[in-house]
Every structure is written in structure tokens, then in C-alpha cells.
Length: 218
Image 1: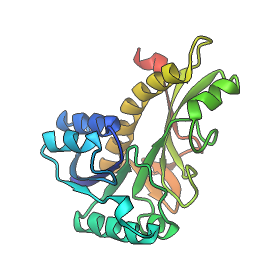
Image 2: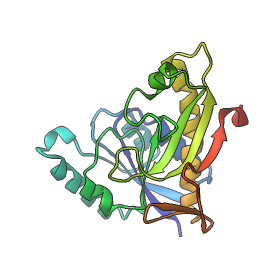
Image 3: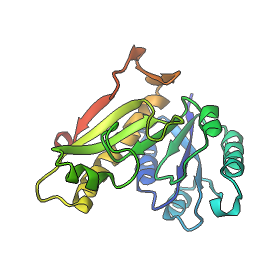
């Protein structure tokens, strides 16, 4: 059965575009039924509209509490009958109650090789630490910020000449490859999350999931 996908955004929506493209190429056995933004001027809304995808704006500044915002967000996702919820540059910290409501159904992509560098400024932190590699991680969302089980990581070498912006561009390339890939596995019922443990074709995944190097896609 075709999975119903909802995507939450706050900005330009480049990962959203990668997912839209993968769906249009039949690389994902799913349908994006709703794109929600907490910012009315997010360019990702235009991307969705150009692809004839329903959009909704829940302006977080219109709410007096995180709980009230999350309640309306929850109602929108339930009304859309979303099977898979994809956070794609969604810059909101979700309440524990909301996360628990959609346990094992909600994904995020984070621009570091988790568990390293949770939070912000991940590329500069990797450079400052003189790490040899950086990347991104697709993980299921739990109440712990950037702490859920990891399905896949994209990895790239950090060159001595890289600044944070150059490293970000390399990591973005990986994001646009691995996020649609993980979503396709979920839509094909290959990847499942059960009580925050990940299984691929019924076999338990290790803690850092699958790996893809940027060298593999050059």
C-alpha cells in the first residue's frame, strides 16, 4: 500500500525538493500528501505548490505555548492520515508528548555524524575539532534532541582547505541522496522502527545504521 508522507519545513526546502523528485521518479513508493511550515515565507512552500502538493502554514508566533502549537500540528497530521512524518529543516523543538504520539513514524536529518555534534553549528565544530570526516545522519525522532536511532549516515572527508560553508555544501549533497533513500526503505516496508530499535528486512541494525561515502557517488 502506498505510504502517505507529510513533510515539515521552516526554510528553503532543498531536502523537500529531493524527496519530491524521488517520488516523481518512482524511487519512493509513497505520496507526499501535505507540507507544513511554521513560517509563511518559507520557499519550500512554493516548491510544494509547484508540485501540486497541499500546503499548510502554522505560524508558531501565533501560539502562546509550544503545547498549543504542537496540538494543531498533531491535528493536521492526523487529518492528513500521514504514515510517515519527515522533518526537513523544521526548526522547532517538539514537545515530548508530541514526539511520543508519533513514535516510530517521524524522521529527521541532522548535519553531523551523530552522536557527535548535536544541535547547531555542526560543520564549524567538526572543523575546529580537526575531525577527518563529517556528514549527516537520518534518524528517527525521540524526545532526546538529535538522539533517536540512526538509519543511515552520509560521510565525506574534511579537506584542510574546507571552511564551514564548503563543508556544508558537500554534506548537503549527501543529505539529498540518503534522505530519499531511507524514506524509500520505509515505504517499501524494508525499514521499520519498533520501540526505538531499527530493523532492516527484519534484521536489527547496528547503532549508526547504513553508511554512504561521498566518494561512492562522485
